[in-house]
Image (cartoon, rainbow, N blue to C red; front, side, top):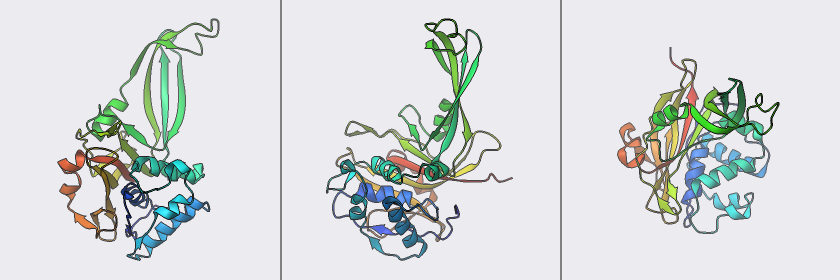
Length: 287
């Protein structure tokens, strides 16, 4: 894999009507610098986007018909607004290459649980493609602070040691999360909708942040999908993405000419109230 995105140039996507959710999701996904997405229909489609960017074709692409060729019926574009997050995850699912996706987005976590009765410690490892942030977190720093707070399980824990002699025994326990392996790309979904209603609480996202341990990588903002409007069904999606060829962030809004964004604008109060998806790229810590 090639994680060097220095030659990537964004292309624009046409919108015949209410296709902004597809366009915004694809602009974010197109920031992932992988040479080959595979041989599936979804992989072939993403390889086409990748080639257009690397070649700096400067063209406007029609992407909705191509997506309809490989997504399930529930996700087909039929001229009405859908959810950018759902189509993003579905396109990834359509790749059918879990090894590749886990290498790109896979955040490996360990859940450590300690039985308060016998002090036995058990660990469970899992891999997530994204981190989902609810409205209780005010920003990425606050989210990770809460993420590592131990959770008290006052009752109902089935300790593997305590249940050896009595399967009905339930004990109190303490559980906390550890991040075992950080991915090349870290994807966040900010919970923005309650039913169809938009939630507008401010969410603080930096242009760069470090992992929690001294050996963890630094993450830099590659792209952010913003939702503009009051409801999911009537709003509009756009993407702010970093363009390495110009060493600058740009606002990508369907087939309109991309507009440069100053650093202060990227994390402005307005964007903090509308950010929906965040994509960060890892890089080694500077000594």
